[in-house]
Length: 627
Image (cartoon, rainbow, N blue to C red):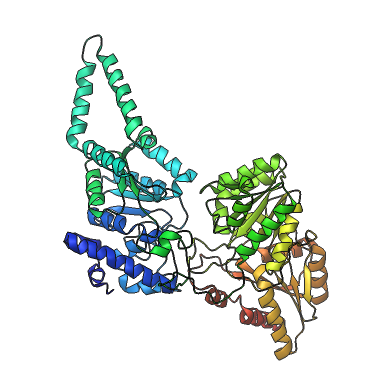
């Protein structure tokens, strides 16, 4: 389908020029365009198909960027990008130097706030709304948040303060986990119409005032009316929790009825104070494979439109899949093992565990802090909790790792998925800070495997360890290493010499071990240089004896890590050198003190010299004494 109408939308104001018939045509064009485009670039398809009508309604009713629309997480902002002048650049979505898959302030004035992690929009919107009030402005502020994100503590904290401050703020709750029966939908529409009528508010206020003036019994009558009103509210209004927090609740509203959405959003302009509009949508709306399997299409790589099948180039299992199946095998041998995820059973590979051991599996919702402390409570009572969280999301639970796990030396396992560069999701999702935020904490062991076989060994090491232990592993397909049903554990803090040589020692960790080996082989073949390569395995504790011995014997050391240099593996090696009074020639390879943009992982590794060529060139510079 040619997106003729969509091509004419250069600014949200263009939406207000469309007839109802053209609006319906536009909705069809957007869905067709999204399916075709994301099939090539990959991305978050199901969430965006679910908010087509909602996004068109928001931009039809409100005047962005004068009115501020803040998207929670932001993975559902593709339609927003299409309607705000980025149609011509959409083919570059999530590509290196192309447009981001999330809102980015530098991209457009319509992107009010950079997002990528959940549960932030209400707090951000409330801050913007209060800034508006203090500046004497009158624009509207709208936070769009999903039902999953609403489980995050930050979202609840924002709701609590918004109700307390009673400032003008609209929260749109995009709920794709429930459905509306015809009767409930009709009732809510009727109630919404009454409650957004200015006459209702005026009569309500006047009646309460008059009743309170009735001698002797006036106050009692007001209280009786309030109790009666509350009884009806609890019976009829599903949003009573939000009302108790100080919000005017509107909904539930059919999120795929554009006319109803527009009317409801227009009505919010008549109401003072915080408002919550409860919108019911369907993930993947309009594309059957995504409707039937929204989890698969939440974030997906390139796929065939006709079948919905992902176009896979590598048939090896992913590291996530290896983790998930290995944990099931280990749990069969150890009934104390339990698994915890923060709303990511598919993403963390724990779906198989949840089916095999439903009583030992816990999905706590988007609540990483709670996940760690909940795990600590289980560990305190003799269980072996394995908390599986993406590296970038585990940042949220830093205090809980310190205070609730490490300080108390509890037997807790942190399985850190998506470590290192994750590619097209960009700076909010790259897991490049975990070494730095973990290694300085006392009473923790931190590991990183060179391949999936070693991942299995580290998992066995972790479930047998009596304290806090973490292992980090990358996104994507594994290398094809041999797997086993019965992995053996590793001695804590011991590295592995994979290649011996007299000219240089390369200390590599995790994903950088194999590129380091390849670089060493090329240096031997082409430059007649012999390089020692160490699979360090452990960030903490380091294999101090091995590193010290090799440093004293060879005198030239190159460290390589897929992590920021500040506070990472190379930094820990430098600290060891200082502590031992060693002064070798040393060079560190890693990521710079910057937020790494989105792009294909292979391209990013090449850019930051973390591929075979980059490591080889750095080794030559060090051996030749070049800076």
